[in-house]
Length: 115
Length: 114
Image (cartoon, rainbow over all chains, first blue to last red; front, top):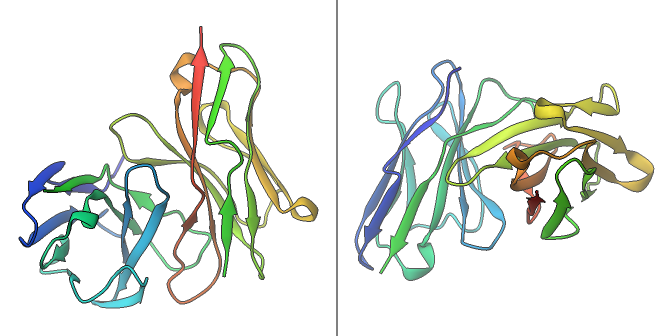
């Protein structure tokens, strides 16, 4: 069964460093997402991406965050200058087509620890 | 804006007992509703979804959920719990808007006792 894959599975970084989290969405999917889950808290929406541009973003997704689809397969989340409060599990997700009833498929997540 | 409330952050049942995980939603427009499961050290896996067809939805691993508009609920049930059902369960809502993103509840950790 096709799946969303994410790398790295775990990353520890120092405060102020840049981090790039990588994702390979399911190959024929057109909509891409990043969500995060701070330990003990809800899974939160960060950003959605379609047709090579951001379609919606939450208030969490400030200027420190950016997303990119550098080629036909990868979808990345960059945090420019990490803060302690960025420590979380980051989930990449993808959906084949638009429409709120269509399933969003999630990857296994990337644990980011900022020290 | 839509929201989801899951009553009970932890639920413990005995193996073979009924599983009931509660989810209530708030939405100003007809919602789409989802249940995801997260096993330890794994990602979010879709269990089932409601998309305005049948109100009783059957999912994987013997789970089902019933959409009750009058109660704004979408509770998840399974007649007989297995040890392998121990995981965290998330209810989520989506409505037709620009980003079509999911809004998640806080999750319920299901523990199954032998």
